[in-house]
Length: 613
Picture 1: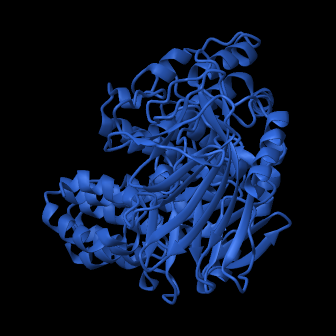
Picture 2: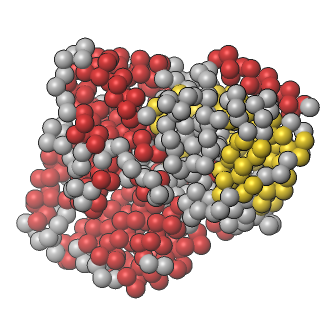
Picture 3: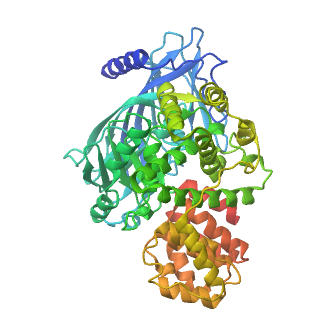
């Protein structure tokens, strides 16, 4: 009864403060990546109670939901994947459930019989040791090598492998949780968090703002907390903490800059946890607790645009969420644009321009790889029957951001900032489709300003439109001059490059091409130490370029060490692809065989397909 009282209290609060979760069939977009039917019955609050077993690599316990039903509701359908469902009750009474056929990407639908007056469902279950969202790490796979580690990765549709849920970005809910784990470890979630270990190993959490299931997150390890600002801080293993606190020293300033641009931060705190290097992404914007890769700890704060990116998601993505994964660009395109505005506010326009130019290079590379006429280069995607992870390419990020840059250039920053601020305020804690955004854009920006922009070409057309903005950088112009000298066999000196940022080095390395000789590459590496760089972005770019220029055999040990340790897919895909394209699939597969046990399922899925494993 205690759980029910808490759930009903939360339900009443949400109903009073937020838009209705149950929409009419006309309003509710069909999410082809979820079995759930939220127009019939929808989850509004979750109470999660889990025990963590590192020996058997299992989470076990219960998920208790408050639900809201249509007048003729007879069932509620949840998404599951490889879960062992022990029992289900509806308003305290046991019911017979149905688990449907298993789909490679979607898992199984869990159908629970209810009636229109049903208020609470309780699912007792446990996870599979190989659950796709969970990565269980041995002490040797962590920084301090003393305690095991566990982290989750829910995006896009992996939360269903550790929690039975309506696993669609179109469904929002609040949650409470209780986690019990070994006393030596500290569990933290995308919710209110402890900052130190207690003596019991049991912790409670609250997320009072409604979020989609992909933002439910859990990390457990030998973690300590370091404060940065009045609402910001970082969690990390003891040996990493001081370095992380320094690296993220501008985090509070980022929050303040973001609020100045687009309104108040509505998630209370913005903390970051530095995960082990097997984390498959640079960062994940779990509300209140961004997950971050240690590969951004460069020692000079040069890679913290990633933190600005995850912070920007607190508005674009977490506050206003893509309704389906076909609308993914509404999360990422807006966030990349917003990230660069934050960096511009803190470090100047030239800094932001360098980021934008590197992003354009990524975009053109992605378009070339996918094909200039490929439908996968559209902003609005059709991912039915596919893993939505296939749509998480630089198209959504960079083409989306450049579309917003175009709009900004047409009306000016002041007018465009007002438009975005109003957009976030109008749609906060809601989901939005591409069509709904087009209607809002037309009504509140295009028509009032008499703009002539072919939005249809940008959103539904292939490749890069002809009116794509052109960004320039004085610093990159100087780097280009160095590259031209390099091709004439004149090496840049340490004095000439002493003040270069990571972005200038990346631009330099990417621009290298034939007739740069193997001898020149060796001389460059000897002079600047790229192959052994502590900056992961620079090292990865150098490995990829050296392989492409067919001069890498001498550094295979460094490449192997990097690929075995780092599980960030952004680095893995281009390096393994370069080896494959160079005709050295043998080396790629040999390295992958050693590295694969260290990778999260998000990365192994991509690498398995790439390398034919």
